[in-house]
Amino acid sequence: MANKCPVKFENVDFCAPSTHDNPYEMYDYFLEHEPLYFDETNGVWEVFRYDDIVTIERDTETFINAEGVRPNIPPDPGMIYQDGEQHSKQRALVSSGFTPRQMRKMEDRAREIVIELVGSMLQKDEVEIVADLAGALPARLIADMLAIPEEKRAAVMTWINQIIVGGCGPEYVTDEVNDAFENFCMHHEEMYQDRIAAGCKGSDLLSIWMNAEIDGEKLDESQLLFEHVLLNVGGAETTRSAIAGGLHQLSLDQKQYDALYEDPSLIPNAVEEIIRWVCPFVNMYRTATRDYEMYGKVIKEGEQVGLTYPAANRDPRKFKNPHEFNIFRDFSKEARHLSFGLGPHFCLGASLARLEVRLSLEEMTKRVKAIRVPEGKEVEYVSSSFTRGLSKFPAVLEAR
Image 1 (cartoon, rainbow, N blue to C red):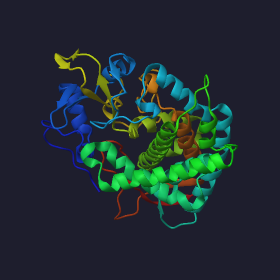
Image 2: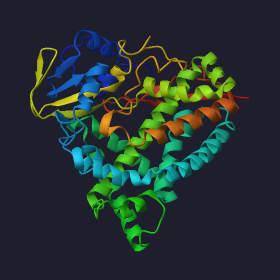
Image 3: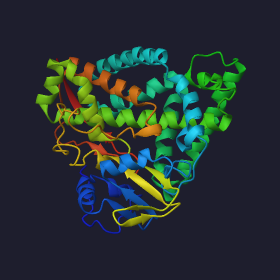
Image 4: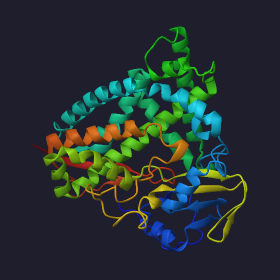
């Protein structure tokens, strides 16, 4: 279904999911005419230009995470809400599950899953790429990393998808969102108690986190819970959106798709272009610790600023023909995308997301000659002010 862009760019509610349905005409307007905008509905600022987002991300004294990274939603004990030394220490504990050895294990397992999923799709007359590949790969890989029981996996992903809706803002934290979070908490507690009963001797990610220690400090129970949530939200959403969105763009340009088959060395660059183009997260917020002037306006101490990453990823000051999907884009002569953020809060799972997108492209281009949307059907997008990506991608695959 086609998404409509707002025709007026005044009094814009940036928390409203529909605001970000096919938003690039709007983003272009703000990039050129109002690069710092105050959203009166929600009492937050929005910034769009690449260099401004870089400046804010790097100025960790002036712009902090500790007051919340979603609009008007209070922080939790997770790593993403910490600053300075506390963030560094907590991030180091969490990253103990992402060592080179762990990453090698993940790559081997991810490749097995991709081969299986693509093989299964090739047995069908029509496939649903979001459900059959783009969503299935990260969901299964994360479930394997955490050793989630097979019978609980579908329910966990349902809860995570509902929790994500609450990231749009306070009015979107519905009873359904709260129920999903409560169910996830009970699931987490069951896993936590199982690990304790087993002496925390497992090799799964939760056991690794429970054992991780720096200077005698470990992650406490509340930190473990929210790192568990964050892994599921970030790990599932980023990769699902990138794989589905990237394959959709390639299905629209057979020459670029064929180029990846003819020269697989192009795939790593294609991965970066896909992540730039799709940009799965619409924004993250920072809070000003002092009055800060930009473009003749003042962000007051205590006010939040939304970093609109998809707009920055198409800033014409940094990217040539920014609205063109181009797997040959020379990032050495242009900017690097900001889809994973920047600075101390750069996405911890970026390498894993890149890995999953790369393996998907390798297997699809090797075994599938062409991807087309069946006549009479269309792709559909998630409507959200937190995440953006395809929710449905019906396709017919032509095998090689």
